[in-house]
Length: 324
Image 1 (tube, rainbow, N blue to C red):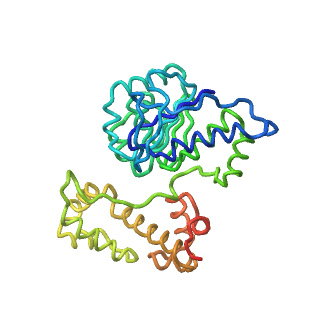
Image 2: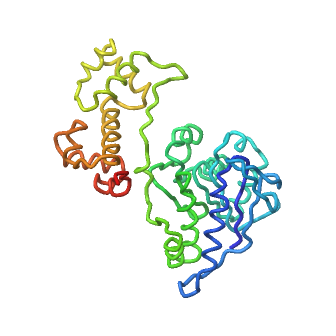
Image 3: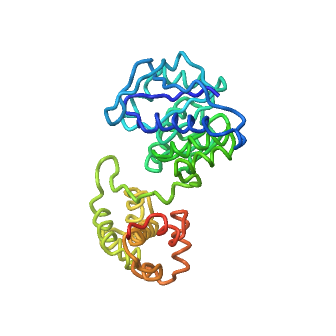
């Protein structure tokens, strides 16, 4: 399997080198693990065949331009610069289209999926990207079945991984798919990596928008700030609309337009965020945290927490606790 990693200015350097290193380590493992293929021709390519400068200012030496290679696998790493520069690079997008239609397996991490989508290779297909980029992705590529909760999606001719550091999940998956799960597992153990991440939801951070076309709705923003400081309280739509100085129907319409959520969904997000923080930085029990964020029924809260984060409270604390 010939593998090329596409590098461009402001790409994540660790993703470019890291993928190649993981694949090289997989090549070095003993045959006793049952691998069927080996990766060869590992190289870095760029849109125009010139060396590039990564996000942190590190130069990446490039072997050749993407137009001059036809790899079995092309890895597209995260973009930390202006994605528009790449999306408007017509020769690059056309070459990605040609490779995808010509049998090359395209494998992206984070914003790399934007390039595959612009190439038209994800229309009508499931895909994922970084959870924070999901709204922008949906607005640009309505024909793609975006599933931002998922960490990785293998569509056969393409593979998408979610977050920026999900290039690690992507590399291990490539090893598992083309060399076998035994070698992939051995790689993960050797590198002390977690190879069992299925969803991005534990990493989501609540960032509700409060502007429409660049202008904040001052009445709604006032209610948002009140809810953020009083999330443990329960307030009816009547009370919230009165705080905004609006009729109930007008309030509901403007709240959804300004935040993208209903008041109840907004409150749930605030409460789960508060609970996540307490699970990370305190030693309070789950029942105590449930009460602190405004819920009376621990069982109901546990179900909500798992639905929104993908983990139950105890699992979340085990993974993310910062208490010594």
